[in-house]
Amino acid sequence: MKLLTTVILAFVALSHLGFLVIEMFFWDHPFGRKTFGMTPEVSASSAVLAANQGLYNGFLAAGIVWAIWSDRRDLKIFFLGCVVVAGVFGGLTAKTSIIFTQAVPAMIGLALVLLTRKPTAA
Image 1 (cartoon, rainbow, N blue to C red):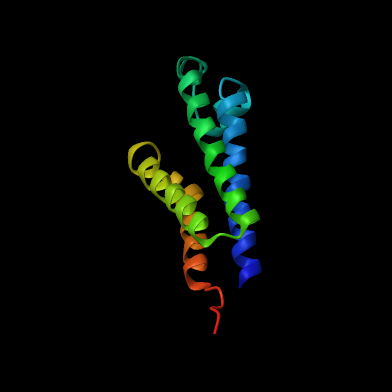
Image 2 (spheres, helix red, strand yellow):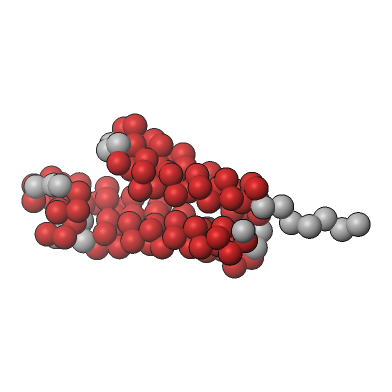
């Protein structure tokens, strides 16, 4: 179960690194426009906001990587909780698919973390 949890958390972290790259570096390029279904005018006018959003996604990825590396349950819960909240908010306010691409994988990871208990000392 621990391996599955780590794989899911790594997937969430890698996804957010991908979001960072698209939002910070490819937002106002054909790839970014195609990915998010934007016109050149929309992508140009929102590029600075997208870069800021990408930076936040990078912080989420870094936090999850830190949580995996340190094997700290509290960090896993905190950063996955942040991803769930961001994904639900984005899904309700921007695009419904964000719930499935961002919140659901984090919810699965969070459920696995909560189900996986560290052995206690006797």
